[in-house]
Length: 427
Image (cartoon, rainbow, N blue to C red; front, side, top):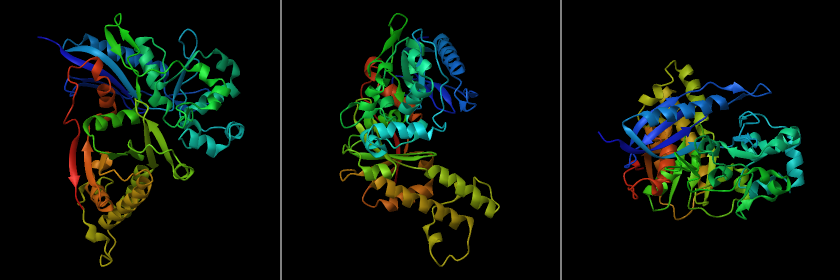
């Protein structure tokens, strides 16, 4: 029995860690997942257990290699952003993998922004709101100021997806989707590291930029990909499938609207409205807006479920019934309250999405949790009468993106179709 040729993709989220194998038609033929316990950094703040994660990757990959059903012909990675691994000259980690939710000292922020043109100037230039530790560049700046001896020992600062690549390939490299995801490192106007990164000596810690395979296993016979930031990677299947301009709304805790066809520079007004920019693996700008709508939805569902003494899953059984919003429905009910909740979320989402919308956009794709919510999707279709609105399904989008961007290196299937399942909603 011949082995199935596959590409292996590690998809590393903050909660779930997965190894997926895709065949040459990009179907998932193997899915191994794990939830790893966190540890704490020197300040007692929860963080990724880097040693445990590294061991899990090596062991999980070894088991996949030994599986007689598959022939692994390439490896790639997608992972969450805004997280650095700092290595010494021997490749040993010098610090914990700090949590991007860790509070950031106000004094350090003031020092940085005062020295480099102010918070708005630096944020607009780097197309990234000031988010403290979520700006990974500020994490390295903090080490320099608070732990200068550690900073001096750092030979390579790798964003997490590139560290994952290093684990299996031994290569040291930087990749543009990680550098360009709200890091405050990259100057979007000049297409280079921002001047503050150079002035503070941070650039000396970053290996060269690569997007092609950065190394190989078994003497180079199995190419290893550069690794990609998960949000940028999740956009790749849509760019591979569709040529007409579109906006992708990725839904989860955050509702993130992404327009890969908007190349205008980020404005101060957009920045103040929580807009930012990502980069594709080719270095192309993706203007985006964020809204904490998934979290808002969860909070309101819990409240109205208590109020009407129903399960928090009750909303999943509701059908779209816009008449329940009309004034003649005087009696309050769970159905009416839930429709009001979703209508309010969609109204706010439209305001956010309109900030990054451009005239040529004719289609809106929604993926993630809200794509299966009939009430949400119908309200969105009504909000955008001049657009085609689709619920999209892409199994394991971030991992699939990391596989697709690597197809020239391993798969004879160059053109893909049918990787995105669509359901249209009409007002």
